[in-house]
Image (cartoon, rainbow, N blue to C red; front, side, top):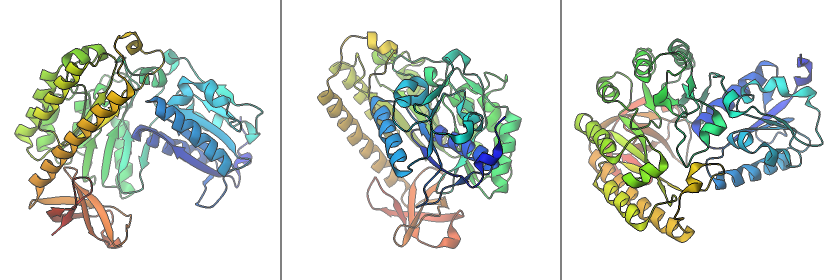
Length: 436
């Protein structure tokens, strides 16, 4: 049993890298520390405790994590340093070897951080507390607010898919989730705090229900009944799990935004097989066409990876042509990065860095074209915009229900308010539409 008196007058600094799920979990860690008397350090204050929640989706992410840990240690001399997250789970020895790190917590341990603080005495070397992947089983609720207006609600964790390029199942364990009742309760808590928008997050949210016998569609229907929430957004959902009934429901729902984020990863069926994805391009096309047929103004974001092992020039051209033929709104382009212990390492034909860069540029240009076309289609329409708190010079920003970024004159009284705006000219495809 830890003596809570050791936390009196302590200040904590938090740094989160990677996905929105990490941000939700860092928020949960912060609430734990706050419950024992640890206050979040304000700007300019030196923290006694540092929490770094890491990412490991690419080799570059690993490098950024190491740099971030060292920077945090330098900025908070003498602080007790805890590093957790996916990189900490996958490569704990790398983190423990950084001078100044005291504790490394794996995925199963990170949401019970108080139990590992050990009187806040600095260590000669980082102490590792991790579990094997098969023993990562707990689901701890997490809900965070970003620095704008929206909340991120963790509904699911882990993944059973084991795609050939991905380490996330090793970092986060098997698919598991909270109950619908518990998640509805958290949504109601957001209402009580004045929140109006919730983004549903997870590793593979469409797989919701593995541990409770429920379905993601059941969850969507239940959340739609929570009074006080203006809108929900569904974060990245696998195309094979984005059922037609979910699309139909969003089209007529009270609160679910016409905004879909669907990972494709490659527009080549041959590459999809090498990736061990669970769908083909025909299914993906059906989902996009289904959405656009009943929700013409829906925003559709698509994830793609370039330069994976096995992606020949011919396969990339197939992918480019497929993407060009789709009616989506924006691409999120990722460059393939070798990850240890993945099945992709067994695939012949490596793509050189220069070719990866060229392919990425081609798809980013295509994304700009698609986004500009989508923005142009929205000019002159009336949309509901949730305005954010932040001020940039004399303007403030917000997003429409279909994820168009809008710029209006700053007025603090409009923050966290829904305003009906007629969309006018836009600065350029990467910034915002502005009010007429």
